[in-house]
Length: 260
Figure 1: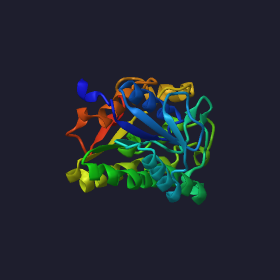
Figure 2: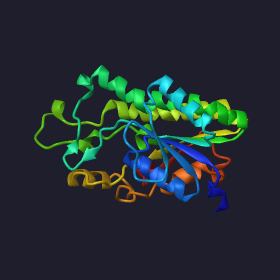
Figure 3: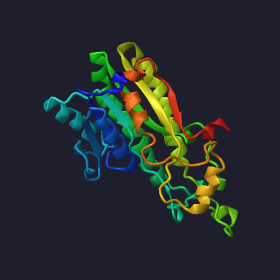
């Protein structure tokens, strides 16, 4: 278990002010890491260093790397967590744009944050890890990077088919793209000691619509969504030496959903 400790190491977490970003940050700090959170929003309530950065802007990401370097901060692990999602709430999906009417503007914005942002952060921090011969990159993907979304989960009784809410196309594309980026960089930097893995998560129970919760529970062998905090040890494992022989992999933590 000593190999899961991160004392003396610094981890950068993008999207650190969001729900999952805070979960990762708290778990990493508990494992002994120093954490730098990056977000366009204000800092969350933790002891991490926070940087307000738009990770879709190459100049801003480069400036962040330069600023941290000037301060003597060495990034030992990078968690690409930032994303724009359409979560299911107590009222269902917050957006109901179907594929036929999905706007190019929204496509570009969501791909920019979730996929291009990860690419830029890997470009900014990965080479220094490779030069030192040690580092870890974790891309936060999803079970929907491995299977297509079951749109029946989001159906609303009484609506015609062409008005039914759906999980947006960008979610699957971004999360699948992160898996591709994971495999590419794992083989690209593998010989230089940089491990790159994807964490493919199921959903977290957070006051979603009761109908949705019943429907998705029927599709998960464990019979429920994850509880907040159940993913915490996964990020510590992937950032630490406990996963020293693991790279190019998708670590699936989804209650068994993709086993069916």
